[in-house]
Length: 81
Image: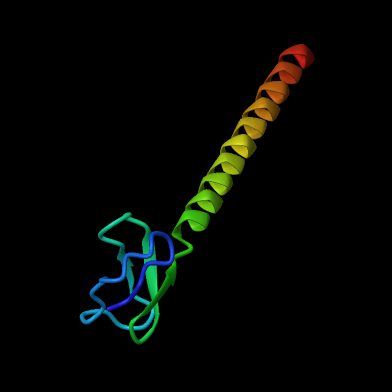
């Protein structure tokens, strides 16, 4: 049994888990990772999700910039004719 570092729930069953496995605290729902025999710590899933969102937002911004540049090129071609 392990103890949740968030809510101090001390009856987390870790028998079926190995080092590095993720699990959720049955009391508070926090995502945890096995760090040793009957030891758990916070999983970094929340930070990874934020990073993925930031990357996606940047990609969308880049796509919008590309579209703007294409529009400007089209306008310049119209004036050349």
